[in-house]
Length: 270
Image (tube, rainbow, N blue to C red; front, side, top):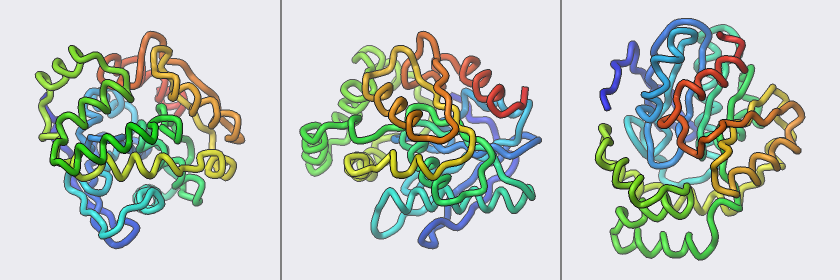
């Protein structure tokens, strides 16, 4: 996949002083994009032409990948503070709170940032994971694979067993991948993020989020996605679930037009 050039590649300072890579494109109100596992800011490429006609997007590289640094010790709280720091950086530049679109693990990071008081106006969270997403047995198998330096099988297991890809879809994904090699990211981040999920308190975070939140949910997604989304909808003071008909966890790739329509409608940017 061709990566559109960034109008502005900059950095912000993260939770523990690390540099977080940012890529800004478009004009209009600021929209921060926070990617999920195994990806970088380039993960959003299918959506960029559809969003940048209406808003200015800034896609961040989460810690430990892309152009961002990594701390000595990992925690979900540090990732959430990273998003908080970037939101404060963008809101200061804009002079008002920003909007946020976050996918999968990135949605959990954005939720925590909002709960901590980040200057956010509206949020769109696409299937944040939680404790039901990965089992203890699966996590133990991933620890063993990474310890054996076998990130490839670990990545396949994540895509098939957790996300719901078929083996054929995994092969097609490999064939069309145009970005960097995901295996170093898998090696560095998969186990630590899965460990963080097992202890995540989503309800405790959600009750402190006062902004309007749209929760995107694919009608074909794995049961954990529906369970976590509905748990959040019940705990968030101001949330709605919006279905993505016929889609699973990866509608950003499979139907970016549908995702963009839902996002822009929630932001009032159509």
